[in-house]
Image (cartoon, rainbow, N blue to C red; front, side, top):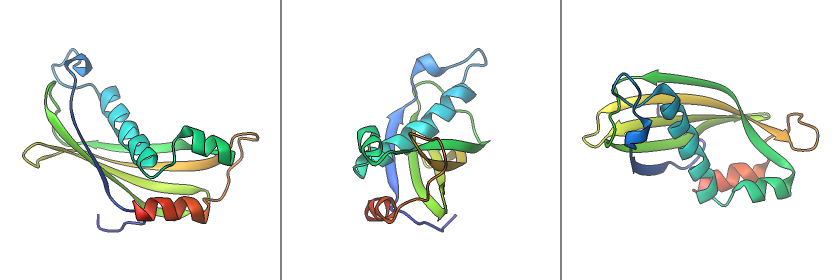
Length: 138
């Protein structure tokens, strides 16, 4: 996918052996955690950590994950997680995450719809120009 409303962010890590399930590869739940972890790291890298969101009275929450498992991830594998926000629409941001192996082989691809909500009311809030700008600059 080439459309991007934000700068690209990358995080490289090793899949912990503790994430391996009874089938001998990293569990599906762990892969979902990797998707969330790289999204959080991207947000923190642009200066939007939990404290910044709390100060603004808003927070992003997941509305939908769509995840394609392309190849198994094994414990100890090096994984390159790449993420960007593909688009904003009202109170939502559509984020893409790709997980690739050390040699570049695709392991998984995810799209997540995040909704910006008011902390006090739990109601959706339009994504602000300040948030869009932070992610656009990277």
